[in-house]
Length: 217
Image (cartoon, rainbow, N blue to C red; front, side, top):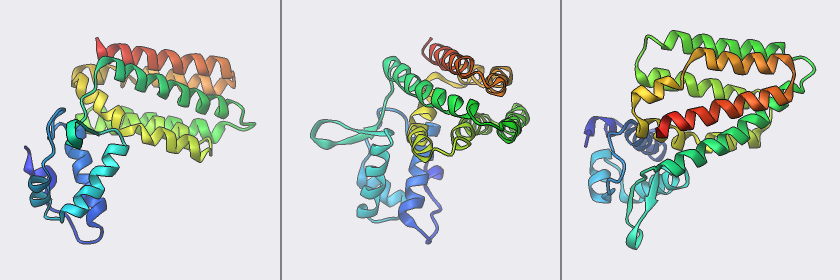
Protein backbone atom coordinates (compact mmCIF):
# COMPACT_ATOMS: atom_id res chain seq x y z
CA UNK A 1 0.00 0.00 0.00
CA UNK A 2 1.22 3.54 -0.74
CA UNK A 3 1.49 4.80 2.83
CA UNK A 4 2.28 8.39 1.79
CA UNK A 5 -1.32 8.91 0.69
CA UNK A 6 -2.52 8.08 4.19
CA UNK A 7 -0.13 10.09 6.37
CA UNK A 8 0.23 13.63 7.61
CA UNK A 9 -3.14 14.35 9.18
CA UNK A 10 -3.60 17.66 10.98
CA UNK A 11 -5.48 18.15 14.22
CA UNK A 12 -8.44 20.30 13.10
CA UNK A 13 -10.77 17.44 12.11
CA UNK A 14 -9.33 13.96 12.22
CA UNK A 15 -12.49 12.35 10.87
CA UNK A 16 -12.69 14.68 7.86
CA UNK A 17 -9.01 14.39 7.09
CA UNK A 18 -9.07 10.62 7.48
CA UNK A 19 -12.05 10.55 5.14
CA UNK A 20 -10.26 12.73 2.57
CA UNK A 21 -7.05 10.67 2.79
CA UNK A 22 -8.88 7.37 2.38
CA UNK A 23 -11.02 8.73 -0.46
CA UNK A 24 -7.91 9.90 -2.32
CA UNK A 25 -6.11 6.60 -1.71
CA UNK A 26 -9.08 4.69 -3.15
CA UNK A 27 -9.80 6.88 -6.17
CA UNK A 28 -6.09 7.11 -7.05
CA UNK A 29 -5.62 3.34 -6.84
CA UNK A 30 -3.24 3.44 -3.86
CA UNK A 31 -5.86 1.24 -2.19
CA UNK A 32 -6.70 -0.96 -5.14
CA UNK A 33 -10.18 -2.38 -5.96
CA UNK A 34 -10.97 -5.52 -4.00
CA UNK A 35 -8.44 -4.80 -1.25
CA UNK A 36 -9.68 -5.75 2.22
CA UNK A 37 -9.57 -2.85 4.66
CA UNK A 38 -7.96 -3.90 7.93
CA UNK A 39 -8.88 -1.51 10.74
CA UNK A 40 -5.72 -2.05 12.78
CA UNK A 41 -3.51 -1.38 9.77
CA UNK A 42 -5.36 1.73 8.62
CA UNK A 43 -5.78 3.27 12.07
CA UNK A 44 -2.06 2.88 12.67
CA UNK A 45 -1.15 4.43 9.33
CA UNK A 46 -3.52 7.36 9.84
CA UNK A 47 -2.67 7.62 13.54
CA UNK A 48 -6.31 7.82 14.56
CA UNK A 49 -8.57 5.75 16.79
CA UNK A 50 -10.46 2.81 15.35
CA UNK A 51 -13.69 4.60 16.26
CA UNK A 52 -12.76 7.60 14.11
CA UNK A 53 -11.68 5.25 11.33
CA UNK A 54 -15.01 3.42 11.44
CA UNK A 55 -16.88 6.73 11.05
CA UNK A 56 -14.83 7.53 7.94
CA UNK A 57 -15.35 4.05 6.50
CA UNK A 58 -19.12 4.30 7.04
CA UNK A 59 -19.13 7.51 5.01
CA UNK A 60 -17.09 5.88 2.24
CA UNK A 61 -19.55 3.01 2.20
CA UNK A 62 -22.40 5.50 1.70
CA UNK A 63 -20.45 7.09 -1.15
CA UNK A 64 -20.09 3.71 -2.85
CA UNK A 65 -16.30 3.54 -2.57
CA UNK A 66 -16.30 0.75 0.02
CA UNK A 67 -18.50 -2.34 0.10
CA UNK A 68 -19.27 -4.93 2.76
CA UNK A 69 -18.68 -8.60 2.04
CA UNK A 70 -19.06 -11.75 4.07
CA UNK A 71 -19.49 -11.12 7.80
CA UNK A 72 -19.46 -7.38 7.14
CA UNK A 73 -15.82 -7.32 6.12
CA UNK A 74 -15.11 -4.09 4.22
CA UNK A 75 -13.14 -3.85 1.01
CA UNK A 76 -12.51 -1.30 -1.72
CA UNK A 77 -15.37 -1.51 -4.18
CA UNK A 78 -14.66 -3.09 -7.55
CA UNK A 79 -16.78 -1.73 -10.41
CA UNK A 80 -17.85 -3.98 -13.26
CA UNK A 81 -19.07 -2.90 -16.70
CA UNK A 82 -22.76 -2.96 -15.72
CA UNK A 83 -22.13 -0.75 -12.70
CA UNK A 84 -20.26 1.78 -14.84
CA UNK A 85 -23.11 1.88 -17.35
CA UNK A 86 -25.57 2.35 -14.47
CA UNK A 87 -23.52 5.21 -13.03
CA UNK A 88 -23.42 7.02 -16.36
CA UNK A 89 -27.11 6.40 -16.95
CA UNK A 90 -27.89 8.16 -13.67
CA UNK A 91 -25.41 10.92 -14.55
CA UNK A 92 -27.20 11.40 -17.87
CA UNK A 93 -30.55 11.81 -16.09
CA UNK A 94 -29.18 14.31 -13.58
CA UNK A 95 -27.19 16.34 -16.08
CA UNK A 96 -30.04 16.32 -18.60
CA UNK A 97 -32.20 17.89 -15.89
CA UNK A 98 -29.45 20.43 -15.24
CA UNK A 99 -29.16 21.31 -18.93
CA UNK A 100 -32.93 21.63 -19.31
CA UNK A 101 -33.11 23.88 -16.26
CA UNK A 102 -30.35 26.11 -17.62
CA UNK A 103 -32.08 26.29 -21.02
CA UNK A 104 -35.20 27.60 -19.32
CA UNK A 105 -33.40 30.55 -17.73
CA UNK A 106 -34.47 33.86 -19.33
CA UNK A 107 -30.91 35.16 -19.21
CA UNK A 108 -28.31 32.45 -19.75
CA UNK A 109 -25.28 34.63 -20.44
CA UNK A 110 -23.78 34.37 -16.96
CA UNK A 111 -24.29 30.59 -17.12
CA UNK A 112 -22.59 30.35 -20.51
CA UNK A 113 -19.74 32.51 -19.24
CA UNK A 114 -19.19 30.26 -16.21
CA UNK A 115 -19.25 27.11 -18.33
CA UNK A 116 -16.79 28.57 -20.81
CA UNK A 117 -14.48 29.48 -17.93
CA UNK A 118 -14.67 25.85 -16.80
CA UNK A 119 -13.76 24.73 -20.33
CA UNK A 120 -10.78 27.10 -20.34
CA UNK A 121 -9.61 25.34 -17.17
CA UNK A 122 -9.98 22.01 -18.99
CA UNK A 123 -7.87 23.33 -21.87
CA UNK A 124 -5.17 24.48 -19.43
CA UNK A 125 -5.19 21.07 -17.74
CA UNK A 126 -4.47 19.20 -20.97
CA UNK A 127 -0.77 19.78 -20.28
CA UNK A 128 -1.07 18.83 -16.62
CA UNK A 129 -1.28 15.60 -14.66
CA UNK A 130 -4.00 13.03 -15.03
CA UNK A 131 -5.39 14.11 -11.67
CA UNK A 132 -5.59 17.74 -12.84
CA UNK A 133 -7.40 16.66 -16.00
CA UNK A 134 -9.92 14.61 -14.04
CA UNK A 135 -10.55 17.47 -11.63
CA UNK A 136 -11.10 20.01 -14.40
CA UNK A 137 -13.49 17.66 -16.19
CA UNK A 138 -15.50 16.99 -13.06
CA UNK A 139 -15.53 20.69 -12.24
CA UNK A 140 -17.24 21.44 -15.56
CA UNK A 141 -20.07 19.00 -14.85
CA UNK A 142 -20.32 20.06 -11.20
CA UNK A 143 -20.54 23.70 -12.30
CA UNK A 144 -23.36 22.88 -14.70
CA UNK A 145 -25.35 21.30 -11.85
CA UNK A 146 -24.51 24.09 -9.39
CA UNK A 147 -25.64 26.84 -11.76
CA UNK A 148 -29.19 25.43 -11.75
CA UNK A 149 -29.61 26.58 -8.14
CA UNK A 150 -31.16 23.16 -7.41
CA UNK A 151 -29.35 21.99 -4.28
CA UNK A 152 -30.96 18.54 -4.38
CA UNK A 153 -29.72 18.04 -7.92
CA UNK A 154 -26.22 19.17 -6.98
CA UNK A 155 -26.14 16.93 -3.90
CA UNK A 156 -27.33 13.95 -5.96
CA UNK A 157 -24.60 14.55 -8.53
CA UNK A 158 -21.92 14.95 -5.86
CA UNK A 159 -22.98 11.65 -4.28
CA UNK A 160 -21.88 9.97 -7.52
CA UNK A 161 -18.53 11.73 -7.67
CA UNK A 162 -16.55 8.99 -5.94
CA UNK A 163 -18.02 6.34 -8.24
CA UNK A 164 -17.25 8.49 -11.28
CA UNK A 165 -13.61 8.74 -10.20
CA UNK A 166 -13.47 4.99 -9.66
CA UNK A 167 -14.91 4.34 -13.12
CA UNK A 168 -12.07 6.37 -14.64
CA UNK A 169 -9.52 4.48 -12.53
CA UNK A 170 -11.13 1.18 -13.57
CA UNK A 171 -10.73 2.04 -17.26
CA UNK A 172 -7.22 3.50 -17.08
CA UNK A 173 -5.83 6.88 -18.11
CA UNK A 174 -5.91 6.35 -21.88
CA UNK A 175 -9.65 5.71 -21.95
CA UNK A 176 -10.30 8.35 -19.30
CA UNK A 177 -8.56 11.07 -21.33
CA UNK A 178 -10.69 10.27 -24.39
CA UNK A 179 -13.75 11.39 -22.41
CA UNK A 180 -12.15 14.74 -21.54
CA UNK A 181 -12.28 16.19 -25.04
CA UNK A 182 -12.76 19.94 -24.91
CA UNK A 183 -14.75 19.84 -28.16
CA UNK A 184 -17.32 17.45 -26.67
CA UNK A 185 -17.81 19.80 -23.74
CA UNK A 186 -18.09 22.79 -26.05
CA UNK A 187 -20.97 20.95 -27.73
CA UNK A 188 -22.81 20.86 -24.39
CA UNK A 189 -22.34 24.59 -23.84
CA UNK A 190 -23.45 25.38 -27.40
CA UNK A 191 -26.62 23.32 -26.93
CA UNK A 192 -27.47 25.09 -23.66
CA UNK A 193 -26.79 28.47 -25.26
CA UNK A 194 -29.48 27.84 -27.88
CA UNK A 195 -32.11 27.43 -25.17
CA UNK A 196 -33.33 24.27 -26.91
CA UNK A 197 -33.98 21.90 -23.99
CA UNK A 198 -34.43 18.86 -26.25
CA UNK A 199 -31.14 19.50 -28.05
CA UNK A 200 -29.37 19.99 -24.70
CA UNK A 201 -30.88 16.78 -23.31
CA UNK A 202 -29.89 14.77 -26.38
CA UNK A 203 -26.36 16.23 -26.31
CA UNK A 204 -25.92 15.23 -22.67
CA UNK A 205 -27.26 11.74 -23.26
CA UNK A 206 -24.96 11.18 -26.23
CA UNK A 207 -22.04 12.48 -24.16
CA UNK A 208 -22.74 10.07 -21.31
CA UNK A 209 -23.57 7.08 -23.52
CA UNK A 210 -20.33 7.42 -25.44
CA UNK A 211 -18.34 8.05 -22.23
CA UNK A 212 -19.66 4.82 -20.68
CA UNK A 213 -18.98 2.89 -23.88
CA UNK A 214 -15.36 4.09 -23.94
CA UNK A 215 -14.78 3.21 -20.30
CA UNK A 216 -16.07 -0.36 -20.58
CA UNK A 217 -14.66 -1.11 -24.05
